[in-house]
Length: 426
Image (cartoon, rainbow, N blue to C red; front, side, top):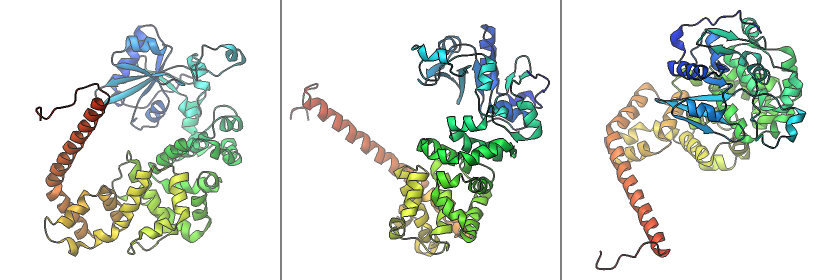
């Protein structure tokens, strides 16, 4: 075990709530550390977005020791601790399954508890296996993750060929981790990723969907998609994007749009916005390169590849697909500012109230469809009409609540649980 490396960071970077949870569990006699991505980020000089904690304490013990904590999960039981507007995940150290565990029927799912060392070796990449004790200011490194951090390498713990077949999603995780950190993929891992990319379709679509969203949150998604193509990963997770990347002309258009998605502010927590920008890049590369020509509904219905891309490859929900389609179709409407010049008109209100309007504005700016004056026009319209929209939405909400209440009352009356109102009661 290597304890020579010290995190190069200011103590204020570590969330005091996380430190408090670690201190409380250690005080009760349980070995407890900050683990995973937050330790990696601290060492890289990046302020972590969240802090995960691991302990020798069992989930029930953690819940009894830490106030406002809740045991969640069945296959992988852990504790969720709530502090202000934040949440901290506290897990018990795990270990890999062995032959004797198969006879133990008391173990449910992935709840084989173990030591810190066993937990480190069951993680995916060495740079994600580091533990940090904020109380004693000590780094715990069982897998030479510190060395790989210094050498800027993404290395798999164990044999990459076995670990990737255990969970092919690790192929996408390795790709994203390399581009998030700017590190190189270790040579044997890279070869294994290319060799076993065929296994990706066996994974659950919701998991691939999340990895697509995480790729879109990268500083430069274009580089990650380019490497996914080079490794033959795109061929198996998105044949439609693979077809885009096969031709120089369409590939250049697609990557150009991805490369510039962060030129304007992007809500990285909004899947509709991230998927909208990815679909826009596909549309400009394969369907309609000319942003000035609005797409008709028939253009979407006739493109089987586009529907397959959104539904079967990205795993977009129906409402997400419709919102993205409408947002791209609204580009022609937003451009016709002169048609909406009368202040407070019903036509202005109809555009602003459309649920796809925010995404349509985002796409219009990235597509350079609107000039600065046109962008300012719609921003001012939105500000002016926002109070009116809020009032209308509140009235609509009250009406829906009254209708739901009436439906419930009728159901209770039909079941004989409450007496029906007589004419004299009305």
